[in-house]
Amino acid sequence: MTPPLAVDIDGTLTDENRAVYPPVLTVLREWDAPVVVATGKALPYPVALCEFAGIERTVVAENGGVAFVHATDDLLFVGDREAAQRVVDEYLAAGHELGWGGHDLVNRWRETEVAVSREAPLEPLQRIAADHGLEVVDTGFAYHVKSPDVSKGRALEAVAERLDRDPGEFAAVGDSINDVSTFEVAGRSYAVANADEPARETADVVVDGEYGEGFLDAVERIRG
Ligand SMILES: O=C(O)COP(=O)(O)O
Ligand SMILES: [Mg+2]
Image (cartoon, rainbow, N blue to C red):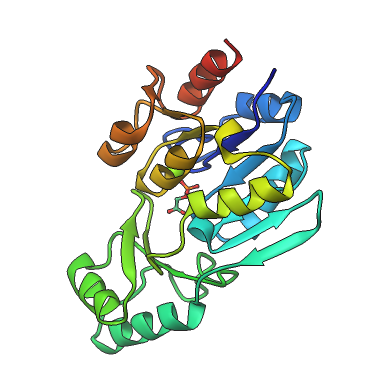
């Protein structure tokens, strides 16, 4: 039987230029069990991906800060945007920038955390975050200022419960440190070849392919 799937976006469903790798859309559409798209991006991104892939909008966004379950119409919030905002305000007051330009579409729809460009200095961000009891997660695509209690894995547990599934039934595919918690709660986990060290170390299997090709490799193994 096909297991439910928890899949990351950036670095896993994309190519090396962060464009969605087209063959993955067919795989998602034809997946014969629930699919949970679990990302560090704000909610509209995975929702749009699901819509364009033609699948139910069941998603984890903001590294677990927000989740939506299509079947039960549940919108779940964990995490505290105000706390993250206080960190950012201090960071800006110290003369740094978030690095996303004036309209900052990266944070515009973000509700429980704040993302900072990897071109911005990390050390002061970490220091200010720690002063506020928050952490900075580097996904390889952005620095995320978030509560240490929030994770994709915990959100997946909440989503799985609403889907009447055990988290251990899930197969998970991802590429970075923000997927480690998903790998820990899923029954089996696959890191794509471009994955960072924490993801590679936690995954049950590191596949040969990179990016979207790596996702297709994982799918082949999951299907057996
Ligand atoms: O938003 C990021 O930094 C990474 O996004 P991802 O979790 O889909 O890889
Ligand atoms: Mg990723």
